[in-house]
Length: 354
Image 1 (cartoon, rainbow, N blue to C red):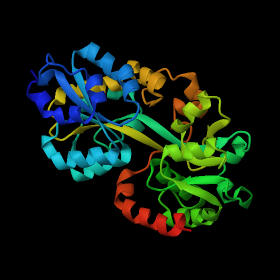
Image 2: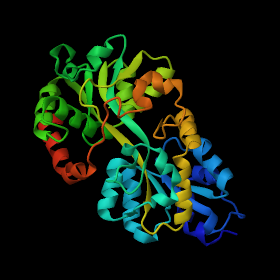
Image 3: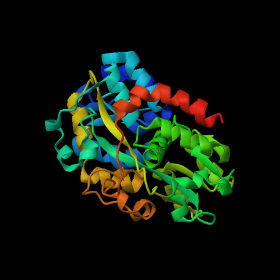
Image 4: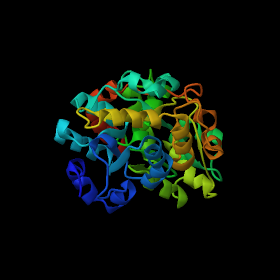
């Protein structure tokens, strides 16, 4: 018979039969003290289970139930439920982590309870966040190697060249690559990452050349595979499957204006099993978990002791193991959160509608 914790999380299990299968819930499930609920992205769940969840359960005896959904959906749910949420750990992108902090739905992680925090670099334990990064994403250009050279793809000017009219796509500012691109252009053509006026003016000049402003990874990869475009700024992770499949596709970092996003491990305010949450995050940051996640999930590891597979280093080079040394920076999320609505509206008026 289900215990109180599993009754409380029944809505999660009812929402997805796959989740029930992955978490192995049964009539003999353990009590609250040895169960945690981890909220994560809706993709790569089976890979995450293999790389992280199963080994964690085996090592600690703590059972993991999985809740999935988009960043915005899960944050809204957390805000609605407040301290009555069942979630113990939320894996979420940096913008939404910062937004959640502004809304008061996360709590500060106790560093003394997570020894592996000492092993990760400063960008991953940025004090502007209440929880650490467990992976990162690099912004650059995904391009067709039969049509574009790496040197051309690394130059932002490629998108403004009339010779490339109708052959490129740009990310909408609403997606992760969008803000990273805007800030990259702002640094390359203006006074810094938050010079929105220079960025929008520059990108407005590129708009007539742009075939499409994309809003999903599926859109941009399909445009490339179908030959409708030859290049687009996007995250390095989008290149992995395409390169492994033997497509004439590569990814390169911009010569100037290199920015990265992080995925954070956050503890909701009032998490039912705080001790279990801390143990999970500590394991998530371990060399073992980071190595397995890089190999199985394709995440870029934050623990410098992790072994990064060749297929990732082939795509992003030295930045796969040390993004800061490769010139990558993170954005100040307080600035992004404070200006997000205005910048989104301006991007629509001044850039994507042109």
